[in-house]
Image 1 (cartoon, rainbow, N blue to C red):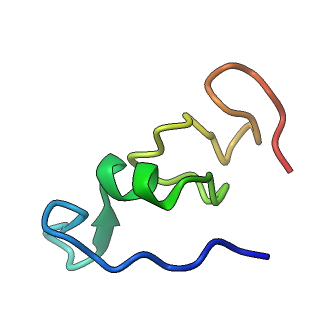
Image 2 (image 1 turned 180 degrees about the vertical axis):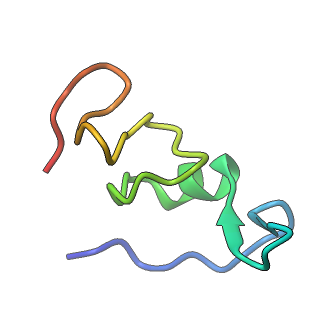
Image 3 (image 1 turned 90 degrees about the vertical axis):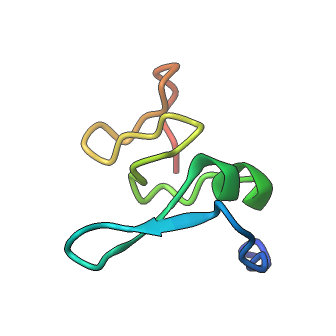
Length: 60
């Protein structure tokens, strides 16, 4: 089952100049797991291009 969405708190996100919402590392850590979407601030270091985290472990 996917993790339950967490209520947003100050510092959880920001908007880019293009108007896109970007979640910060703070939000991802509170969420508690990697969504494997290649997020800009992924604390687990997941790369969508390689399908691996920063330690080289395959995910999925």
